[in-house]
Image (cartoon, rainbow, N blue to C red; front, side, top):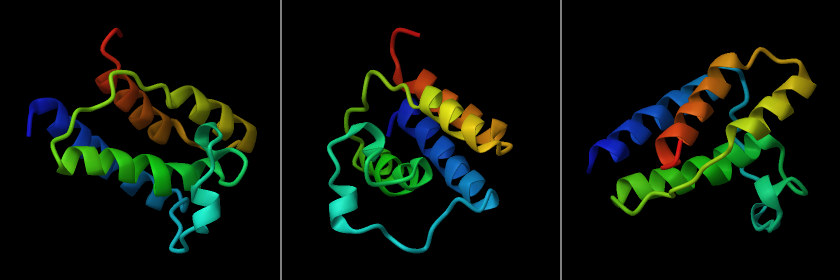
Length: 109
Protein backbone atom coordinates (compact mmCIF):
# COMPACT_ATOMS: atom_id res chain seq x y z
CA UNK A 1 0.00 0.00 0.00
CA UNK A 2 1.49 3.31 -1.01
CA UNK A 3 1.38 6.55 0.96
CA UNK A 4 -1.66 7.91 -0.90
CA UNK A 5 -3.62 4.73 -0.13
CA UNK A 6 -2.66 4.99 3.56
CA UNK A 7 -3.66 8.65 3.71
CA UNK A 8 -6.98 7.90 2.04
CA UNK A 9 -7.66 4.99 4.40
CA UNK A 10 -7.14 7.26 7.41
CA UNK A 11 -9.43 9.95 6.00
CA UNK A 12 -12.14 7.37 5.25
CA UNK A 13 -12.05 6.13 8.85
CA UNK A 14 -12.40 9.72 10.07
CA UNK A 15 -15.21 10.41 7.62
CA UNK A 16 -17.19 7.40 8.82
CA UNK A 17 -16.68 8.44 12.44
CA UNK A 18 -17.74 12.00 11.69
CA UNK A 19 -20.90 10.78 9.99
CA UNK A 20 -21.67 8.61 13.00
CA UNK A 21 -21.02 11.53 15.36
CA UNK A 22 -23.42 13.67 13.32
CA UNK A 23 -26.00 10.85 13.41
CA UNK A 24 -25.90 10.59 9.61
CA UNK A 25 -24.95 6.90 9.62
CA UNK A 26 -27.75 4.49 8.78
CA UNK A 27 -28.06 0.88 9.85
CA UNK A 28 -30.55 0.27 7.04
CA UNK A 29 -29.21 -0.26 3.55
CA UNK A 30 -31.18 1.31 0.68
CA UNK A 31 -32.76 -0.95 -1.91
CA UNK A 32 -30.72 -2.35 -4.80
CA UNK A 33 -32.75 -0.14 -7.14
CA UNK A 34 -31.84 2.98 -5.13
CA UNK A 35 -28.16 2.01 -5.15
CA UNK A 36 -28.26 1.44 -8.92
CA UNK A 37 -29.02 5.04 -9.84
CA UNK A 38 -27.09 6.44 -12.78
CA UNK A 39 -27.53 10.06 -11.68
CA UNK A 40 -24.61 11.96 -10.14
CA UNK A 41 -24.57 11.34 -6.37
CA UNK A 42 -27.65 9.10 -6.93
CA UNK A 43 -29.54 12.33 -6.37
CA UNK A 44 -32.76 10.76 -7.64
CA UNK A 45 -32.81 7.86 -5.18
CA UNK A 46 -30.55 8.60 -2.17
CA UNK A 47 -29.88 11.42 0.22
CA UNK A 48 -26.33 12.76 0.04
CA UNK A 49 -25.34 11.08 3.30
CA UNK A 50 -26.72 7.76 2.02
CA UNK A 51 -24.65 8.19 -1.14
CA UNK A 52 -21.56 8.84 0.97
CA UNK A 53 -22.18 5.83 3.19
CA UNK A 54 -23.37 3.25 0.68
CA UNK A 55 -21.62 4.22 -2.56
CA UNK A 56 -18.71 6.65 -2.10
CA UNK A 57 -17.08 5.17 1.01
CA UNK A 58 -17.36 1.52 -0.07
CA UNK A 59 -15.91 2.25 -3.51
CA UNK A 60 -12.93 4.09 -2.09
CA UNK A 61 -12.44 1.49 0.66
CA UNK A 62 -12.44 -1.23 -2.01
CA UNK A 63 -9.73 0.60 -3.96
CA UNK A 64 -7.62 1.05 -0.83
CA UNK A 65 -8.02 -2.56 0.32
CA UNK A 66 -7.09 -3.89 -3.12
CA UNK A 67 -4.27 -1.38 -3.61
CA UNK A 68 -6.00 -0.45 -6.85
CA UNK A 69 -5.42 2.64 -8.93
CA UNK A 70 -7.10 5.61 -7.31
CA UNK A 71 -9.16 8.17 -9.23
CA UNK A 72 -7.17 11.12 -10.52
CA UNK A 73 -9.99 13.58 -9.98
CA UNK A 74 -12.50 14.00 -7.21
CA UNK A 75 -14.86 16.88 -6.43
CA UNK A 76 -17.25 15.76 -3.73
CA UNK A 77 -16.82 18.66 -1.31
CA UNK A 78 -18.76 21.25 -3.37
CA UNK A 79 -21.81 18.96 -3.32
CA UNK A 80 -21.41 18.51 0.44
CA UNK A 81 -21.16 22.26 0.97
CA UNK A 82 -24.35 22.83 -1.01
CA UNK A 83 -26.25 19.96 0.61
CA UNK A 84 -25.39 20.84 4.20
CA UNK A 85 -25.78 24.60 3.68
CA UNK A 86 -29.40 23.98 2.73
CA UNK A 87 -29.91 21.76 5.77
CA UNK A 88 -28.31 24.24 8.13
CA UNK A 89 -26.29 21.56 9.92
CA UNK A 90 -22.90 22.18 11.45
CA UNK A 91 -20.92 20.15 8.96
CA UNK A 92 -17.57 21.95 8.84
CA UNK A 93 -15.55 18.90 9.95
CA UNK A 94 -17.30 16.56 7.53
CA UNK A 95 -16.78 18.97 4.63
CA UNK A 96 -13.10 19.39 5.58
CA UNK A 97 -12.65 15.62 5.35
CA UNK A 98 -14.23 15.61 1.90
CA UNK A 99 -11.99 18.50 0.85
CA UNK A 100 -9.02 16.44 2.01
CA UNK A 101 -10.18 13.54 -0.16
CA UNK A 102 -10.67 15.85 -3.14
CA UNK A 103 -7.16 17.27 -2.73
CA UNK A 104 -5.55 13.89 -2.21
CA UNK A 105 -7.16 12.33 -5.27
CA UNK A 106 -7.07 15.25 -7.66
CA UNK A 107 -3.64 15.34 -9.22
CA UNK A 108 -3.81 18.88 -10.62
CA UNK A 109 -4.67 20.74 -7.42
